[in-house]
Image: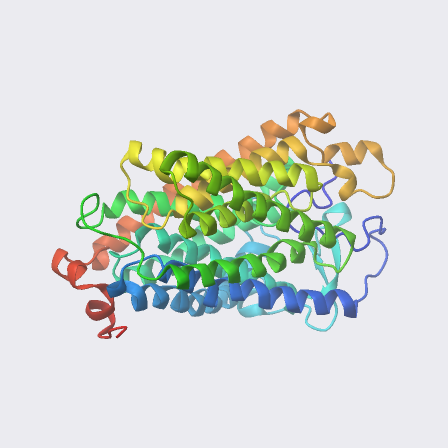
Length: 447
């Protein structure tokens, strides 16, 4: 089956471009991708750093921000050394090769061709330099690892986090990105639709966070001590940065300043707004009052859920996706968490994992192939369409991709955590946890 771009990297600047044509760098597309890269980086530093730090207790604020900041540096170096090559080198169906090790051989002064050397329809041309593509994808790898820390906030050793993130980025994130977003990848071959990271980023990080929460165990005092957020204003600032940065995340995944990027931006805004209102409504019904924490959680839930669908759906379905995410993620972060007894500190699984699943499934319902196939080829457009457009098989494909990523991420994460636990131990002592990570891990206090 011809797979031009069934997942994540929607090179729709010239969707009808003959592969024999020589692509050229487009200044407008490149400029938009430079901006998008900055926006996505902003989602981690300072976005996730503020968002998570505002929701922990005062004694752990600096330690929480340090995790996001350090992960940014760690994953950037890891990505340059081997992560990018393992994700976007041709390799095999499960992982890339090391032909781009230390960024050797990348096309820095000409247009990038994804899958160059594979031949035929597997070569997907872009109109941006490979350096820009590499940097854009780096920011995705950074935020994915950073999201995991929300599940184990308040109790994971800094040294353990460092030792875990490096191999996780190489052995979990890069293979999943390759499988979903590279023409040689196994999930790409299935025809799964993931425009900007529902499986690669959110389900991957959410599952890893859930496994980590179980492996590390509950925080000292969980369930009876006061664990209210230290500064919801800081968390709201982080959420605002995430919302704005998400336009680079989703609309930037078009890799072009074109009509599809415009639609991705529009549906991103719609879903975020719908998620916010849905969570607030659910919270008002269940708890009697809407909260600031609920508002920002709902917004992020809507943003997460629209991510895989953002290049494949119109505004009406985006509204439905956002509403569904707000309600389902509220349930997952309250009732489901209580029923299953895990301590997902900042709801990395409840919002990102569950929201990613909601979005991936509903992409299989609402996807419209004509958003990508604009040359009038109805048969090809149907390949990229969902259940409501007449392609019921897409729901099965989406479910298979969710299951594959979830199982691989869970097993690999568990193994890596156990190795790190043997090396240095995963969590601080009870006394250190009570004193706080800021002092015990970094010798500093917020004030």
